[in-house]
Amino acid sequence: MSTNQDTNIDVAEGVDHQVAMVMDLNKCIGCQTCTIACKDLWTEGGGRDYMYWNNVETKPGEGYPRGWEESGGGWTDDGSERVAGEIPSREEYGRPWEFNHSEIMYEGSDEPLRPRDGAEWGPNWDEDEGAGEYPNSYYFYLPRICNHCTHPSCVEACPRQALYKREEDGIVLVDQERCRGYRYCVEGCPYKKVFYNTVSKKSEKCIFCYPRLEGEGPDGETYAPACAEECPPQLRLVGFLDDEDGPIYKLVEEYEVALPLHPEFRTQPNVYYIPPYAPGQHTEEGETVDVDRIPRGYLRDLFGDGVDEALDTIERERQRARQGADSELMELLQHKNPAKQYRLGVFDDDD
Amino acid sequence: MTEERTRALVTALVVGGLVLTSTVALASPLVDARPAHEIPVTERADADLGSPTADGWSSVPAADVSLSSAPSSVPNAADTSVDRVHVQAARSDGDFYVRLQWTDPSRNVSADGTRAFVDAAAVQFPTDTSSRPPIAMGGTDNRVNVWYWSGDVGPQELRAGGAGTTTPFASTAISANATYEDGTWTVVYSRSVTAEGDGRTDLGSTDTLDVAFAVWDGSNGERSGQKAVSEWHYFLTGTGPQGPPYQTLLWTVAGVAIVGVVAVTAFGILRAREGGAD
Image 1 (cartoon, each protein chain N blue to C red):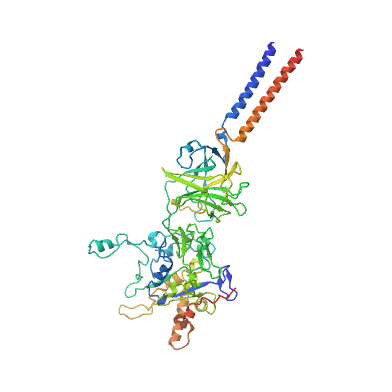
Image 2: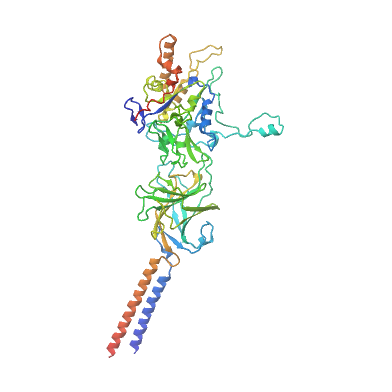
């Protein structure tokens, strides 16, 4: 690890700047547009069918792949040693289902269109299930991509150094020339965001849409990753963690309201989340009471102990804004100016 | 006259005995007495050895090579399931053949599943045959040339200069054929002895070619450094029913010398006796 001398931000050794993303979970409507934007661009076929580099899962829930939070990987508490992990099975990722199309379309069956046998699990299977009981049930959506970690256990797990962090922006990539399909990265990533291509027999993962960042599209313009740009409620901010003038630095480092997912995995993720708010619990009579609907302990499990202070800070700043005072934090969380939401070219002139 | 006769008889017996000993020494194959790490390479003209089940292999001497888990930093490196590989080697019509056989109760030839790994085997040579590289994939200054076969992609020729540096050749010079029967894999590798290329072992450069072996059991999740490996062995070229050529040469020289010494001694005795008679 090295510290960027200009910003005092820890970036990985040998990395100049670190791309980062903030996702505001209060804005996610679970529409999966990000999932499809990513899939259309990168994982449509050729052994990638089962992969979702970007997925949106309902929390509480088992997620994608099923039970990933208990699948091992990452680092021990002091960050010195890797924790053993497992490779998810195809069932845990979800197999494509067979439907009764031919019976209905060609054989005159009047059964409803439905999967044949074996539809027992799939990505987003437990959508909107959540937890709790009426009238105090709860759930929220959690969009997930590769965290492009500062201390990536997938990179460390590869005995061939096929995975690496790009020097210029810390994006974690798999060198397809070096990869021999051993899958130590798949088991080593505690977020299960490295995938094995069953046709090419090599591992693949989210590339933070680096060709878009580099203006490799037909119009030569720079774009944020597709999952961010295509998001209907525009819940994602994209930039560099060490860009002190950018919203990500302010949300993560100054206000400390954007938190990494499962910081106890010790990989130092560079995707951060504004934790979800929910109305207080209701009594049988429908009155709102001052009890958290989403148990605070559950949010701590997901986002670490910083979640209490983060939610307090947001609550305090909301009150200020309600009372007519200026709140930079509220503006950051509401801002629609694309120049601030996506700040990607700030270090282009560095050399 | 009686003394004379006795002397002549003793001389004849000694000479005959020595000649017989020399002849026996020349003819004995000595294969059974070879050193533990030696694997004979049999010369065969016009033999069809490319198929794992070819008849020609039945008369090629074999060596049983012990395998143990390779020292490696990958998870579960100590958990390997194959502990022995049966090795045969032959040269025929300018090709070098290596045949490996090992038992594996399950045949794993597809890596189509997220958790599926394939059975595989490898033969490792020093790129430069004049010195032994580090056993684990060679070293930076002392590289290795690996003949790799796996159940899903077949033969691959690799080069490496230390763990984690394995790189496939742009075009392979080896071929491999494999069969799986009754819980046993049989793989035959072959390569032209004269095949040249950067990083490619010159098989004709030495009569004692260092070689090591590795086997992976796919059903046990074995891949990369999780593998069963041998120590360095060596292929001894020129071995066969007559034994290696230098051995024959040595025994011939020794035999001729012994016969010569006996003849000169007998001649000397006879002359001394004749001189004494004068």
